[in-house]
Amino acid sequence: MAYWLMKSEPSEFSIDDLVKAKNQTVPWFGVRNYLARNYMRDHMRVGDDVLFYHSSCPEPGIAGLARVLSTAYPDETQFDKKSKYFDAKATRETPRWMLVDVQLMRKSRLLSLAELRDTPALQTMVILQRGNRLSITPVTSTEWKSVVKLLGK
DNA sequence: GCCAACGTTGGC
DNA sequence: GCCAACGTTGGC
Image (tube, rainbow, N blue to C red; front, side, top):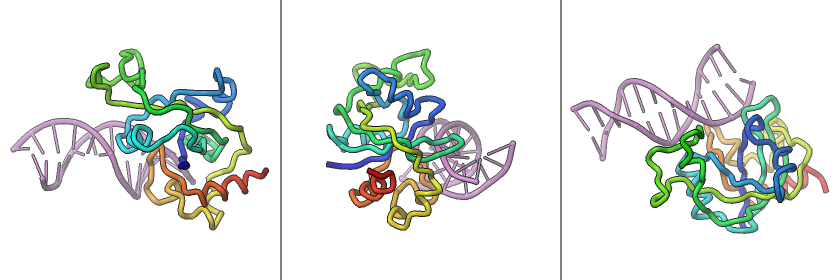
């Protein structure tokens, strides 16, 4: 069992969108970074736990808990000429971008970035390291437990 | 394969 | 809107 933090811009896809989504599940489309892709393709397993993080917004922070619902499969948006995620170099025979399905466990209070920074037990989080911009990062079990504790219940 | 230029991310 | 950080591109 592994733990992950996955960033989403709420203007594009928020925790409330996930609450409303069919089966409260979303294909994690739009990742266009190789390391983040590799985490999904090579390291995520069904049942892994996910921190759903809101980025590039007025109140960045953890907005809910989710889990990995599928193994990796091709991201359809890479084939869609009308999508901003279209990739001319990707083909169905040799897809370049893979994703997993993510299902809501529960929406939480917003655990703000400031609060994360103020929590000694969370200083090791990749997302808090200087210069880190990766949209998917591994989380340790210790960090996970600390976050759940801060969220309460 | 190097590396300068350029583009993107994302908090502030 | 700024800008630090870092990934990608492309000429050589």
